[in-house]
Length: 306
Image 1 (cartoon, rainbow, N blue to C red):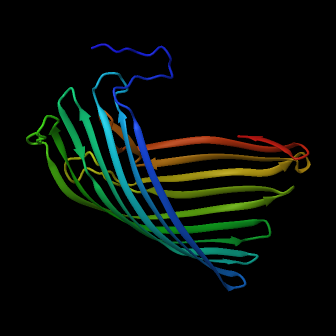
Image 2 (image 1 turned 90 degrees about the vertical axis):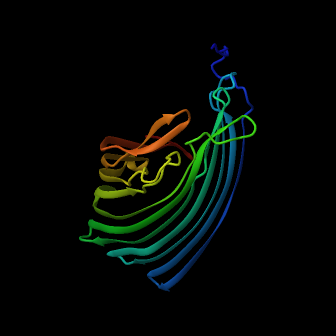
Image 3 (image 1 turned 45 degrees about the vertical axis):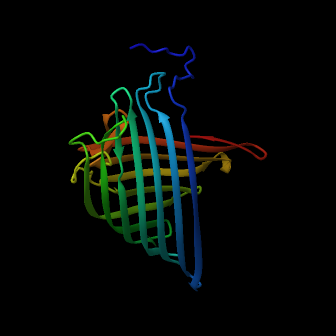
């Protein structure tokens, strides 16, 4: 088997013409009501719909080896209600969040050289409910403390089917390859946040914070049996930094250092041509320093970088 590689690095060979189609629309409604001069109620309702389809020569050669056709239908509805209160020494916000989603993805992977087609047809329903609250208290004229917490409950259901089918007419399933199953997962998460802020001389600010994050678990559409999904990902993020003005206020500088500790890190694992599964790694740590600056270099002209 030989390949006729194009001389230009920006060119590729293909045995089939790629195409895609995307239809996406949505709407949102925001209602704001002042309950008192210092207390505000906000309701945010949102809806989104997606119809996405593409076809591509997955082997990216002039040989007719493998093509992929995917069609996805997805829609979601969310509602968030918050109440916020603001006073000179105390600000707080609390609320609830509701989310519902349906996603249907169909995959057809043709392998003409092998003479068969792989079909995947997963349908996933997901719901998420959360309550949250956060408050910032002025401990002194310069020092303030922030504390908050969020509780999330997520549930997901999948109906999945697939198999391998002959490309020769009449199309017939390869014996022993067809499967179908249903599976469910549910996870709960407490994600707190704490922090301190100190107002420093010359309009500067110093801060430290610790926050726990949560990333939902899910299913692998390529799995042929139940119980092969992946667990939620967790992370603790620690950050400390300084923000202030230099050069008589003509320059703003922000410096921060951070550490992120992950457990059950979600990583993609290739299991076949164009097919990836998500699995959980044991742990990972990211450490870094970030510097950001914005300076006024002339009338109406600013330059910055990070």
